[in-house]
Length: 345
Image (cartoon, rainbow, N blue to C red; front, side, top):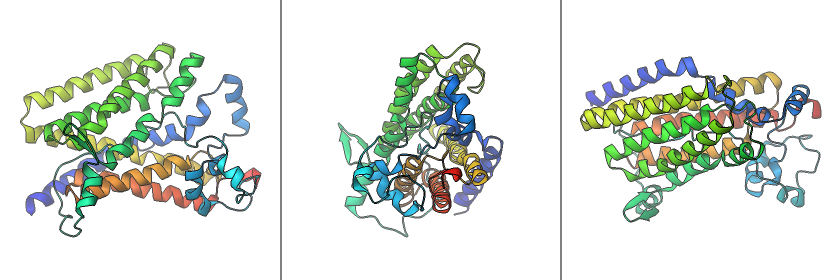
């Protein structure tokens, strides 16, 4: 309808205006996570030989199956067909600052459900395979929890060393802020499949932010900004969400929060462009976490399926379709450059 077309064009122009200024922020975070959380001595050493985040990619059984098609000759010192080497080692993708980049957004606009009809079992898996006293959540919500738990290892390291190194605070405060936003939005729509997966984001984001705040020096200005600025921003953000929900009618509140939330998700997905640029310049994927790329592809695919073919909702499938595109481009870089550093080949 004309109303749907106008709404879609409004969303597109709004997101386009919001993407450009912040497109490199999250990519810069991802590209430097593994190197910045180090002692001063180790950080100095990494200037000469940057850390390769994919060095153990074949040691994780599940990830290794995804990685095999992208391995090139000379990528690893051990034979890639050695099952023993493939099965031993630590999990890949423990990068600290990776935030849930696929938090859903929702509002009916397009008409894709007419093209694809999901079976009842598919609908069950996507929307209510978890049902706790009427609070339902599907596979997309479960997949999002992987991203919320990702910084746990870094938070533990911060507590042990009582130092944050040069890690940014933004991924943790952004996790909490996004959780507040989409929980409010889901409650407005009375959709537990939207708000339930984001409640852990509020709790874990607040926990990570609190741990970081306690061990971050007051003079730190690389977070970006200062730690007190992040706390103030969270307070203002929370007050704004509550104010919109309370004083605006439901339709207006849904539109405001939905548009704002979608723009944030799009910016977060656009961030890896900076990391991709570095990969192309260095001809090396050492700063591009392979496990995170795979997790993003799977997670976004679930949300696109759920949003497009079950809810017929452009505010869910639109931003996550961009996430799929970003992940596919990153996989293309792995296909081109493999996993090893140029000097190791």
